[in-house]
Length: 356
Image (cartoon, rainbow, N blue to C red; front, side, top):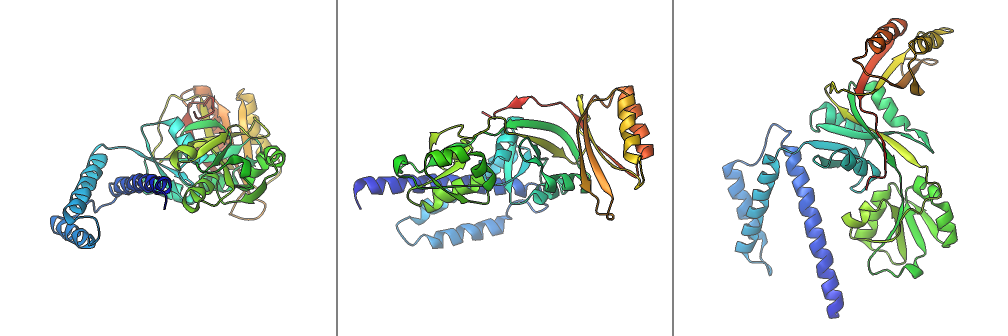
């Protein structure tokens, strides 16, 4: 190999080492929520003996032991810092992680493959918070998340309204003029159709925008790019060729922050979910309560109920504080007109952000 290629491979390996260490620290944080925390003294000694036996190549045994002693020390430091965890769905660099960072940079964002794992993690106390998308201005409600909100006893303590901006990312060694294929989630590809056609690119659907960025970083296919959030360039060591390539700049996703306990915040927005009797005019009776109390509904969305065909649950958001007697009285009246009622939370209404 030429010296330039050797140096480039060393750089990539060093990058992978740092990424793997970050993943290890995430797992160390997660062990804090389990009953068995850390290794017993005897188990730790056996661990280091096994590590020393593995180093029969170029790496010296003492170096290997010292390296892992430092890793264990850093793990304990991270654990003792007491960081709170927020679960999100997707790979690192997903828009849900951008929303989590926007909500609070003090929280450690933990990736999950499925939305249900985020809800389950909060329910079990593995995460302090969860963050999930509930609405998109172009695609509408996120049905799986809304169903999980109905079926779980979690509270909403905050929201993020994130402007979705797509970036065109490549490997650092790739000449952008030779790019032929672009990978991303089907929705992202559809939202960047104009850019893709203008540049004569072949689109390749992938399960996740950030997942596509991770694939590009690990497999390194030639003449290939991805469409993802610009955060992915930093996480996966990619180059940003062009930002804001979406056709419609009004693409906005609303995320909500979940907790196991009601946050009891001085909020100005409330979310509830309810079901009405399966009879003519029952929904209108509930909506008239809000109208008579001069309460502005900002969202009403129906989802089929699992309790039988023809039954629906309604997710409703509106402006107001739970500490306002007018609001409290209206909600008491709603309870009496419904067969299922659940208060989801009162929280500060979010301003639009681009997550930068």
